[in-house]
Structures are given as C-alpha cells and as structure tokens.
Length: 254
Image (cartoon, rainbow, N blue to C red; front, side, top):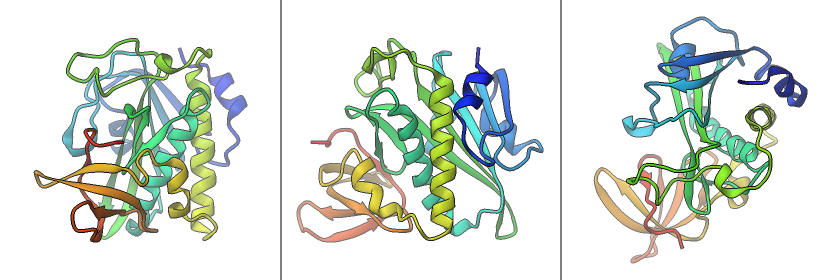
C-alpha cells in the first residue's frame, strides 16, 4: 500500500506530485503517462510493472519490492533534456539518501557502494521539433533482500544498506521536492549542474570503463559539461574528450 497522507505531508512542491495516481499493476508507469492525458507534474506510482524498461532497451526486473514511479513534464525544450536527465538523477539520489548514501553513475544510475540501486529512463514524444511530452521514470530497489545470481554482484537495495524504517512515500516526496527545486533554479540560471557533479558522482576522478558502440576504453572521469555530457581523460594518452552516449562499466571503479 502507498500512504498518500504520509507522501503529501512530506511534499513541498508547487506542481510535481500534486496529482498522484496509484496502480496495483501496470505494463510501465512511463507508458501510462505517455499514452494518456495527464496534467503537468502528474506522477504515476505502481506496486508492480510487468514490462518495465531501462536504458538501451534493457528490462527493469521487479519483484514488487521496488518504488516505481514516473512524472510527466511538458513545455521542456529538447536542449535541456540531457541536463534534466542529470537533475532527475541527482533528485533520486537525494531521496535514497534519506536512508543511506547514494551516488550517481553517469548519466543516471544510482549506486550504493558501487552497486546499482536505481535505474532511470527519460522518454519524450515530439510534435515536429518540440517535445510534446517528457516522461521521467525510475525504479528504486527498496525492500529487496536478494537478487538473481546474474546481477547479485552489482545490484543492491536500500534495505540491505540501512537499519532504518524505510518509507517509500518519503523517498518519492524528497525526490520530487529536489527535482522541482533544481529544475526551477536551472531554468533561472541559478543552478549549475556541473558544479554539483563532484558531490553526486560515484566515479569522479576515478578510473572507469566506457563502452561505446561495442568498444571499451579505460578513462578517468573528470566531470560533466553544462549540457550534461561526461568529461573523460584517456588513461593512456591523457587526452580530454566529452561523451554524450555510451555506458559506464562496473569493472573499473576504484
């Protein structure tokens, strides 16, 4: 059960989450918002989703122990989709950090002690060159006590990292509070996402493996650009470059 009263008592936004829709089971919370008419800032939460998906077409595996939600935004220009992706990642990390320290692996996987605790997916529908709908969805491992063998060495949950009494409603409220606050300040030119990267990044100034088009390179993560692109340094040539697509591997994070 999702306690709406507990959620609303912790929510201090103007728009985000003011309308929240709770489902027992959906194919995907993103699909609900993309394929139906909801107002700006509406949030969909599901106890279970049967066809959740992540970045690069991956499937989000859920056993009913996760916090699964999506939020609808409109009126966002395509130019700020990637910066918003980073802001959303910061926000989910802030929600998780009510209970245990979470960091961001570019562009927006949340990790606890280098193990993935949350995956996120930003999707948009376009009318011409304009984004008619932008939907951000996240799945957070909250109460999971164990994971399938093939991902057990790189997945974790909040439950496995705290002895506190965990409330999904408080995680969601904190994530939405942070998200709206950061987005408003970004739009006003107050918030610089690149200045926050050192605080939120799991791999700042560490060795990472970057997978792009099937090719893996060893790099040192050096920060992000205002556009959200990742700044990396080649470990062999010291050359600095920027990345806007690709995957950060789990095999180099020390």
